[in-house]
Amino acid sequence: MIVMEERISRLRQFLHEHTADGIIILQPENLRYFSGFTGGEGALVVSLSDAVLWTDSRYTEQAALQSGQWYAVKNHEGKLAGSICDSLNGMGVQAVLYERDFLTHSLYEAISSGLEECCFSAQDLSQLRAVKEPYELTATRRASEIADQAFAQLLPYIRPGVTERELAARLESAMLLLGSEERSFATIVASGRRSAMPHGTASGKVVEAGDFVTFDFGAVWEGYHSDMTRTVVVGKASPEQKEFYQTVLEGQLLGLGAVRAGASCRDIDAAVRQYFSERGADQYFTHALGHGTGLEIHEQPVLSPRAAGTLQENMIVTVEPGLYIEGKYGVRIEDSVAVTADGCEILTKTSKELMELL
Image (tube, rainbow, N blue to C red):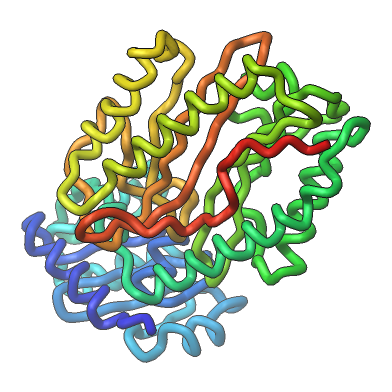
């Protein structure tokens, strides 16, 4: 169960911490998180004592049903900037926060020109959503289950002669039929030389015998995204392929073993990089080790060389090392996990032993 009062309370505590008395929220995921409104078109204006949800006539009934218990729902009638101004002025807000990446310059100018006296400060609200509530963990588990089941259904179709796009279509269709609201992101299916492209979305390339094929995909349940990567071999794997795959798998297992509440995000990434370095393969690991998921596919926390902070219990994070030799092949293995006090709960259950699809 979502406890919206607690979320709004944390938002107001955030205002106190940043010496502000109001906030404008425009990002659809934050709209949903802090109000329950899933329409995506609108704005929240929240002060220390009042809260308004502005939307248009297409969504007022929906917004009232989803958010009316906590927000005064109002129709901005095509005048969003003026409506936000009216709320801020009416609430007596003098220091307002806004989302750094979602308030456009033109909207900022329109709002600020209509305010009596108010200073603005850009902030990032992502950290407020980083630690998941029980409801969010349950939703992500279900999304992960759907992805696991869909991949199991796909396995018989992974064979020479099929195209990457056909495999992506079958996988996405299976997830939808199993209950996913949509795909988490553009499904990655990359075979042969294309498997060395970390984000090689499905193409018209025909899968051939002996190919590595990397699948990176996810389902969505109640707005929450799953994320999983598995790499398989079509036919019999060569000794070199087996060794390469095993190196990635051992690095991934090392990363999983380092995840626990209190662990440094940077140190977890560094441990896997050091492992690859000792095997002369670190130059082939070209991206961050992992990221959070939730209402967005990429959220806080991040496991990377530049990451700050530590993991907290009930955060969700991916662990997804990959090695990519340009012009040859690549392997990535990824799980989504929920951080626990002494380790992690792996949410993506599909086997990581090398699958040779004969």
